[in-house]
Length: 195
Image (tube, rainbow, N blue to C red; front, top):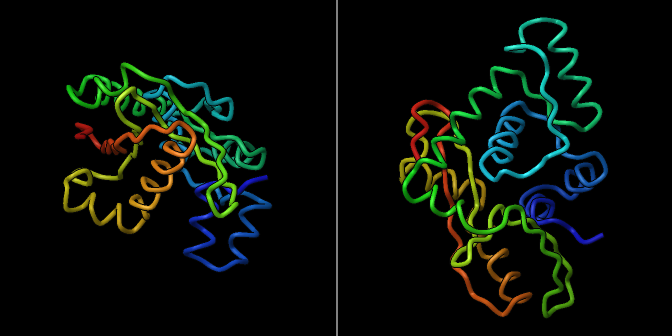
């Protein structure tokens, strides 16, 4: 099975043991990742069968915490009803934004790529959205002000977003012969969900 972009990034930026563990067990679950996955599914209007809505409005009760742990153990993405409400607001902000909304109105969500480069290395990845004129990546960012250029630039550097853009752009070109710009849409999870 070819390595994904995420696993390749782990291998390049971490110890080989971490790469091997994540390959065999997956990444440890985090509630922040779960919310980001939910926002992705709503904005991209894609179906993510891993998402499970837990009948609670937060994780404070023991029953909700147990349901969250059980979903994680089954490699599912648990979200509570409060997160579903919040994610719907974030998705609406993206769709109503004049530029971001226009990008996500035309094209295809979650386009998977598998390629073999000129050196014979096989890779795989998934582009969030393929617009006829651009490859688009949706990023959810934490707090109020985190989508501002200075903060987003630091986040992009910390998480190697430039490498992701280069790998996916090159893979798209290799597979289609078409060179498209790679755009990142960053939306804040905190109200008013600036982009």
